[in-house]
Image (cartoon, rainbow, N blue to C red; front, side, top):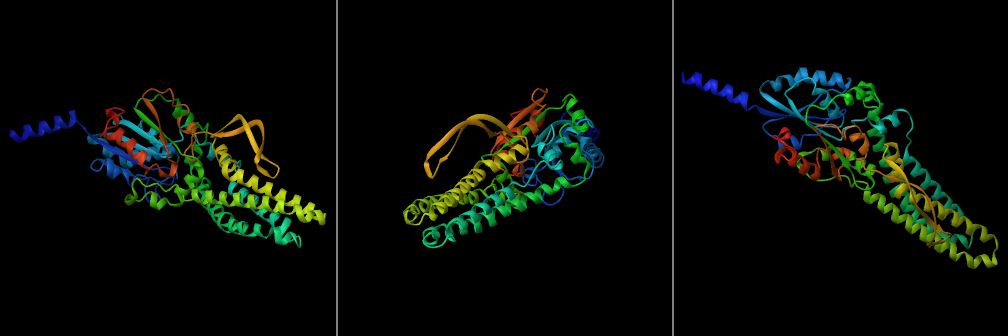
Length: 420
């Protein structure tokens, strides 16, 4: 009798107080290599968390169906479920809510709920290689500088000789170094979009899948997290991508790897500034021999023209390149502002005018804020949460993400539906 009573008690207890399980899902092609959630799953849900991998070569609905039948159905027998999903995995998680009433909450992180504008522009051929553009601008500026002064003959060659050293350093370190590396990493990362997986088409803005998904009423509590990376967002995201094995390594928890290329571009800008100043000195110095050798006036103007090309390159590396990237992910808004450039050779004097300039909106280096929250702002049971300084690649390992997930899962800040 005691044994029967104990069994009945256990059945009642289990029914009244079901165990909660956390399912962690990766994004597109995340099944290849270290998992996005190998750091946070054992840290936050060591005893009741499950990292589940799935092949990406299906529609999102097909992925959800296969996941439910092969993995999730067995887990829900004795527990309520919470799904935490990154990127495309968030769309899979939203699809899964229709399979089981045991799914009590979902947390989506960097999910293209309204589709990815960057993906659309890439597949339609509307993007171009911005790093290649920067490399071409640098090559043209360097060639014009060298040709304008160094090979003009005595005394111009002697006066213009100081131009050569900083340009040589810039070409070796920035043009052939960091910009070429960025170009290679970007091409490798964007290569995933060239795959023929049906799920990639599902993530296009306005796809039939997204229209149906977003038309559904949100019946399950949903936390929708979007990244707001710092200045030079895409370069930071590419930096994290180039170090992805370290980003996903549990021994590096709370360490950021988005600085891989930032100081190198800053160093390149410093060299450009040095080159600009050197051109100014050469331009002024040539005024003396030009009095006796009138042909030097023409050479002097070529030095000024070359300096202006370095000005344009500086602006492109500092602002334009990043605005071009942001524009291709739909994260740019044009606003009327003052636009100032150096007036002639004197860099202290500026010529300013009012014009519409691109302003970069919040994004994680891959998805804009609008990609993640558009259409989700007024849905019931949905929290849209911004996480600062986090790019798309490091959402599985960043101190700000850890703090936020701790608030959600441990401290119950957003209710019991998401807590362990």
